[in-house]
Image (tube, rainbow, N blue to C red; front, side, top):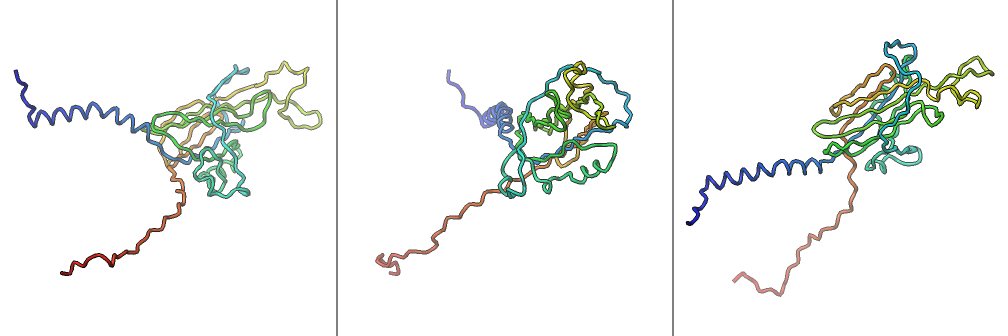
Length: 258
């Protein structure tokens, strides 16, 4: 029995069905190739001890781990000009290229806060929701820990997301015999019974965010301000190839006037 040829309507239906079956795969491939440049800026500040809180914290915190990330590369603006870093990821931008300087100054003027980190950099985020973690460290180091340590992460899918894995370590306060003030410094061998980290405050959150908006992550002891804006890197300057616009006329060719 001979098969009947497909009608025009059946052919269109088959093509549409095939396109719908391929659409998720094509969309996934497009997301994987979706790469966008952003300038990211974070401010991390700690609240003063005079700010009351009802939250309780462990007196002897257990050992912790956090997501290890990339270290940002510092650049001395007096040595290198701005143009070479416009197309480079994970470079700490000079102060005049930051976008949250006013917010940082406002926190600095408030005696209830102390700014620990203020950094801005540029990077590419892919549309496959992969998280890029950035190492964060600030303050004095003691016994393998720093006053502030951890990482922040960023990802891009349908929305932008920020991930915080930050830990503020409070070291034992030792009285300095040569002065009336208290100071945080390594203990002598005979005083090793005191814990390495007396108290720890951890800011572990995930937040959906929009670009070009200032986002605020709150905590009884820590404040995290984040802003992510789309960025267009400078295009490389290419030397144009001269185009020969002269017209060559073959004088030996027969004339078509006849």
